[in-house]
Length: 70
Image 1 (tube, one colour):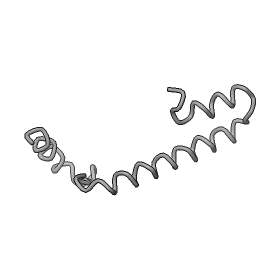
Image 2 (tube, helix red, strand yellow):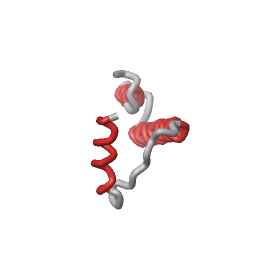
Image 3 (tube, one colour):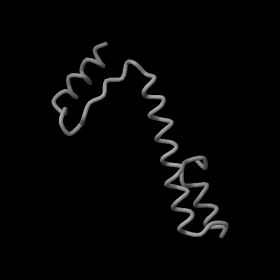
Image 4 (tube, one colour):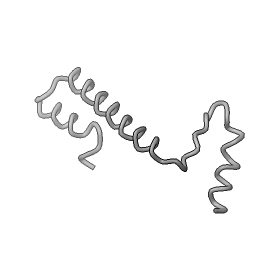
């Protein structure tokens, strides 16, 4: 759990090693890095079906049903 984004930075802030602004900036940077790693991984997965949840919500339930049947 201590490897979760924000914990390390939060502990450093509580120990007075980082100021508030620097802590928030580091958390934001680590979140962006993690999201980038996730997107890199997802792009390599050919079986993923991308659906726009705002425009393609009618496609989601049939895809879920198909997943559970397979």
